[in-house]
Every structure is written in C-alpha cells, then in structure tokens.
Length: 94
Image (tube, rainbow, N blue to C red; front, side, top):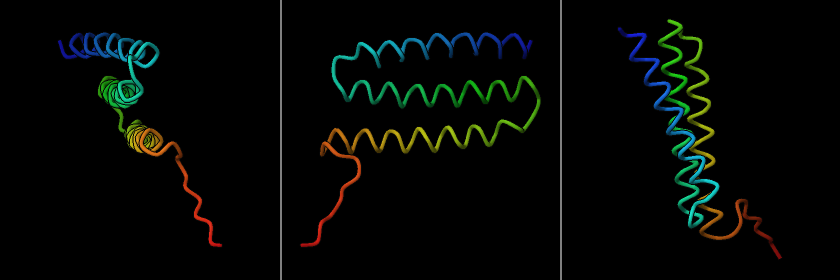
C-alpha cells in the first residue's frame, strides 16, 4: 500500500514540475518565473525525499540539502537581479 501511494505521489510531483516548467517558459512576468523556478526546486526536494523513502536509504539526504541550498541561493540571486539589475555589486573606491 505504501509503495503505491509513494508511486502516485511521484507521478503527481512530476506533473507539478512540468506545470511549473511551463510557467517558467511562458510566465507573464519575470517574478512569476522566479517563483515557478523556486517551486521546481521545492518539488525536486520532495521527489528525492520520496525516492529516499522508496529505496529505504539515507544516502539522498545530502542531495536534498544541496538542492535546497542551491534553490535558495538561486532565488536570492534572481530577486536581487530583478530589484537592481545586477547580482554582484562591485564597489569602487576612488
């Protein structure tokens, strides 16, 4: 029973990832695309977590942490780019 529920959850997460991917490509505005990209990162974390449960291993926990950190840094970078137009600011001392 648990394996069936986990498999159905993987299918639903896959459909949701593709829906968010559509929003990234066809989004009406740039903030919508950034939110969809962050949502894809969260869905991938859930996908890998379910795979970890299905395979009964803790080996994927580091992957989940890495994806979470990269998704967070990507969201911060995109939001900073949208706000100011640059990601890394270089201060010049004259």
